[in-house]
Amino acid sequence: MSAADDERAVDRVLQGDLSAFEEIVRRWQGPLVNMAYRFCHDRGRAEEMAQEAFVKAFRGLAKWRREAAFSTWLFALAANLYRTEIRRIPPRTVGLDEIAEPADPRGTEPDLEDREQRRLVQRALKTLPPKYRDALVLFYFHGMDIVTAAQSLRLPEGTMKARLSRGRDMLRRKLLHATR
Amino acid sequence: MRRDDLDRFLRDDDIVPSSGFVARVMDAVHAEAAAPPAIPFPWARALPGIVATAAAFVALIAGFVSLAIEGPASAATTTTNLANDTIVAWLVVVLLLCTVPVAVSLRFTRTLVNDD
Image 1 (cartoon, rainbow over the protein chains, first blue to last red):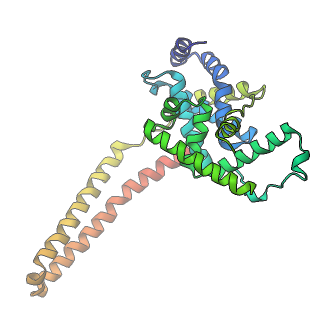
Image 2 (cartoon, each protein chain N blue to C red):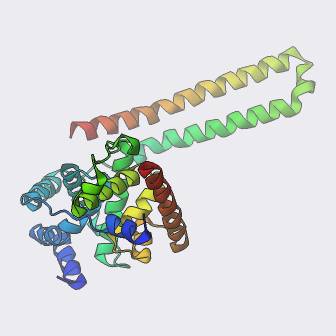
Image 3 (cartoon, chains in turn red, orange):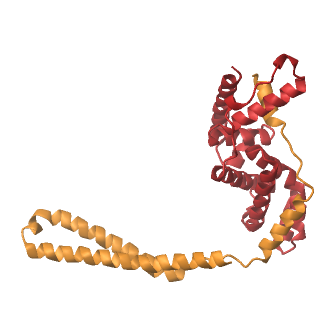
């Protein structure tokens, strides 16, 4: 399914063919659920947030002005909704200091250590101020593409770059503090 | 932690939506499509109230400004002061009265939306 297929599906939905929206949901369910998951790290909540994003997209389909790709519009709408949702009900966070150290770090399996570090990074990410966290989440979600991430956040590229740089620095400091 | 590691941990974190996800979304979409359209704000009804409120605000500010300008001179006569006080009091009453239709319209709209 290409961008032209998306456009055709949108046209059919606007003409009253609801089954065409199912094509859109099938195509974009993975990215939308994953983007939500990166914000909340809760599978159930991520699906609820993605569902809300799809319903919102359905409601506002006529407002898509076709200046950008449908996916760009959909991701921007979803990112906006997720940020609002996360601000309304923040995900449960545990302080980095509260995470138990492995009993014997030398004896841990490499993938276990990897998983632990990943968990540490994700938790540190949750503790960042929203504007830096959102920038990092969307940058990595969009495969490290600054332009697309900036579009999703409706930010100028320069601001996006600055937030990424500052966000990474803050993340590194938090991780350094946590592993000391 | 190196930049590469940080990138890796932040990038590779994908999940697969559950099997019933599409069906749940489509149920929600069908429900959304079946729902009656949202009731628009009754601008036609609220407009007179909004205009009257704005006019009352302007009149109130103009009243205060003129009182401030004429201050010492008008303070000399009790009659003028009384007249000014009456004007201000009337302006306040009018202002309060004007907010009533706006508040009622908003409440009415909200009740209708909640009932749906």
